[in-house]
Amino acid sequence: MFANYLIGLREGLEAALIVSILIAYLVRTERRDLLRFVWAGVGTAVGLSLLAGAALTFGTRSFDDKAAEAFAGVMSLIAVALVTWMVFWMAARARSMKTELHAQMDRAIGIGGWALAIVAFVAVAREGLETALFLWSTIESTGGGAGSLLGAALGLATAVVLGWAIYRGALRINLGTFFTWTGAALVVVAAGVLAYGVHELQEAGFLFGEESIAFDFTAQIPPDSWYATLVRGVFNLRPEMSVLAVTAWFAYLVPVMTLFLVRARGSRPAAQPAREPASVD
Image (cartoon, rainbow, N blue to C red; front, side, top):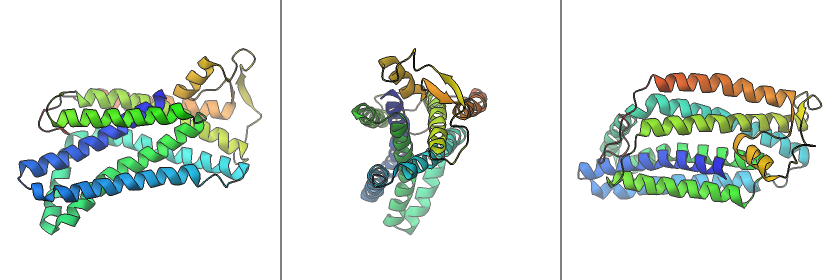
C-alpha cells in the first residue's frame, strides 16, 4: 500500500502540476475560451491511462503460467527503465518545464484549439501511462490485493488535492525537496520491481540461476507474516531470493541512488510560488 501510495502521489502530482501550468497560463493570458480544449486533452489522456491499466490487468488472464511469468518479467524491466528515466528527467528538467510548456502552448494557440488539446494530452498521457505500467508492476510483484489499489487511489487523490491547493495559492511546498525525496524512494521501489522481474524471468526459464539461492529465511520468517509482507511491499525483498535477483537489486540500487543523490545535491531547490503552480525555480 505504501509503495503504491508513493507512486500515485508522485506521478499524480506531476500530472496535476502540468495541468495547473496549462490552466494558469490560459487564465493569465485571458484565453479562458480555450480551457475546454485543455480539459479535453487531459480527459482523453486519463481515459487512455485507465485503458492501459485495464489491458495489463485483464489482458494477461488467458496466459499460461510460463507466458504470464515472462510477460510480468519483461513489463517489470520496462517499468524500471521508464521510472528511472522519469526520475532523472524531472530532476534535470523541472525548472524549465513551465517555460517549455508555455512555448508549446503559444505555438498550439497559433494553430488552433485542438493543437492545444494535443499538447495537454501528450503531457498528461506520458505521466499516466508510466503510472499505469509502474503501478501494475508493483502490484504484481507484491501479490496485489485491495491494499495496493487503495494505496494508489489515495496517492492520486492526495496529488489532486495538493495540485489544487498549490494552484489556488493555499499551499506552498518546496517542489525541489519533494521530488528529491520521492525520487529517492521510487528508486528503492524500482530496485524491488527489477528483482521481481528477474525472478519471474528465471521462473519462466529465460534467465539462469533459479536454483542458486542467495539466502533462505523462510524457516525463521514466514512469508505470510505481517513483517515479511511489509518488507516485500516496500522493498520487494522476500525471505528466499536467488543470487541473480539479489545481485540485480544491489546492482541497480547502489549506482542509481548514488548518481541521483549527487545530481540532486547539485540542484538548488526553491519554494513553490503561489500563483505559478508548476514552477520549481
